[in-house]
Length: 163
Image (cartoon, rainbow, N blue to C red; front, side):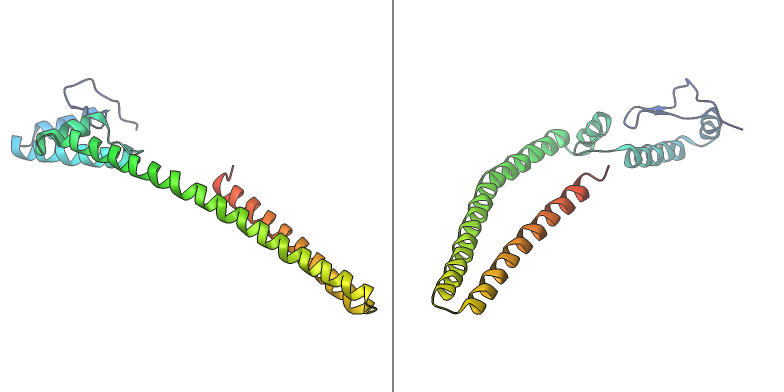
């Protein structure tokens, strides 16, 4: 049998929940000290279940102010400091990763072209079989690198966006 929600004073703003009538009746029978302890437990459990994202719900932030002087402000200040730090790191790390990627592509191109030039020189010198093998291996290696790189990009995309 489903329980009905009540509009009694048993509302927990930090968790934004209202207790069912049966629970309100049970709580009224408890001594005040035990009733307050049960309320705190219910409130903490509800917040733990409903809290999503980096910020606690406003009611829970208010509770931090009751426990620690300026607790909510401290939490928000620390989050802002951490966000600023992360953005500064990203502003340095991402451009460096891009430079490394470009540098790797240039080095790869130089190596691949060197092997192709060497294979043409071998063919021109009369070592057609060796030149052809060297050029073929070079081209197969290049194609393999691009295919594997593309598969990794696709795999990372699907892991990031599984839907």
